Length: 364
Image 1 (cartoon, rainbow, N blue to C red):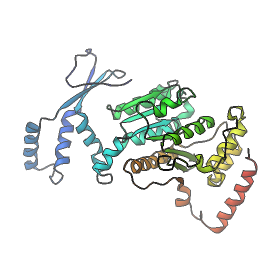
Image 2: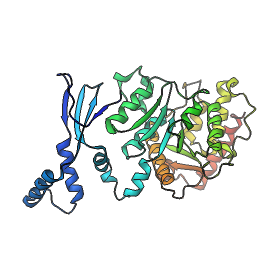
Image 3: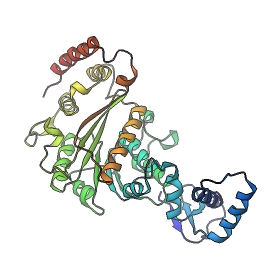
Image 4: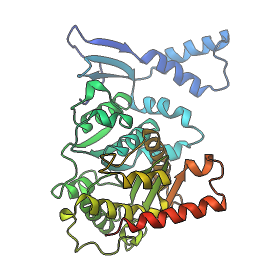
């Protein structure tokens, strides 16, 4: 449930829990402004006391109805400075502000939940639209932030509460019915219109339609695909290349194909073609062949989803700051970096042979 913001302490029920986050915040602001001072010095304490008396930093009261808790902290401007202070100088103040100013949308909260978390924890966009129709199940807990107390709740509700715990000033657009034919345009173009669209949907038909609409309105699309212990990252800069073919041209013209009539095997084959069989790890190829036999669905790792979140944060920051970030397919392979012998000629040859066998079983 969205927190309620007050400029003055409100009168609430007696059972309300009161939390003071103001005093420590003012102290932290002092040391951010005086980085050369030693915290345990008597002289520093004197200067701190003067700072507290003279600065008169505006406070803010935040009421969380679902927790029946009232938090006193600093105002939005100073809270943002505090929350992003440890990002400096890895992210400059100017870059951080540009990043904060983006309006983004995330459709699909499986990998998408980790992307959302990464954006928020790094002090990213204030305006975020999120969409998912599904409810949390125990099998989701290997990658989605939640717990047993959240089982059965809509993923949107869980994700929004996690965001507001960290960023009570966030402006969220909640699409708890997911993306549909009816609301796709509203999600992408409705107030506020998106600066970047993150596609983590399973629906291939909507993936195609969303890209066609993004092309028309010059909205860049980013998609991260779990790939075992690695990530396949797709960037489509329709803002710079509005005539660019969707999915890098990998699927050809799919406008005349009725994807709704696809069986699961056909859907999986087309999805695999979009990702690119040659990019899939050996474990992922083996897993896809076992769907419907020994496993019920495409396997995903929460650790990989976290890598995807970090990668998309970097891409978004660069887009926000108009830094070079070309369209293309990128792979972030932990196997390549960490596994001994991964790039030995014999291993490369073996993977190519296995990929050819795999591709023969997945064609549309």
